Image (cartoon, rainbow, N blue to C red; front, side, top):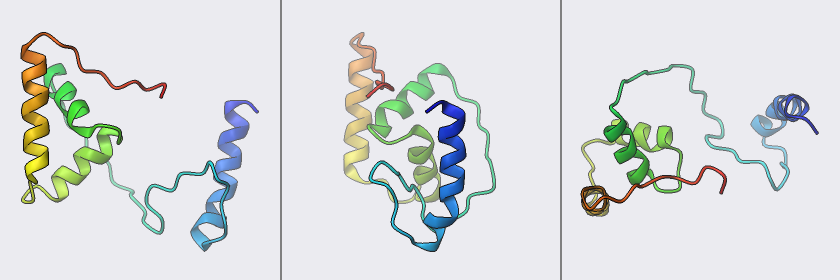
Length: 102
């Protein structure tokens, strides 16, 4: 299956997913029943972006950033600690990168 036929198949399955029909095991539904139709662009330095990637862990950076913007008054202690660890590693010369192939 090429990337275009996979995309066409995903688009065709959208209605089924929104109706609540069963989906394939490899289907990932990020926000069932919610439509996000607005885009917010921000400019970051490479250092700021890498800090976000580090803090996001295994979740997409955009999802992590959205959560932070929408819940900015709820900074859990674990995020503060994670940020401090990422900062310390960067200052020690380590490069923190997300393995997009995983």
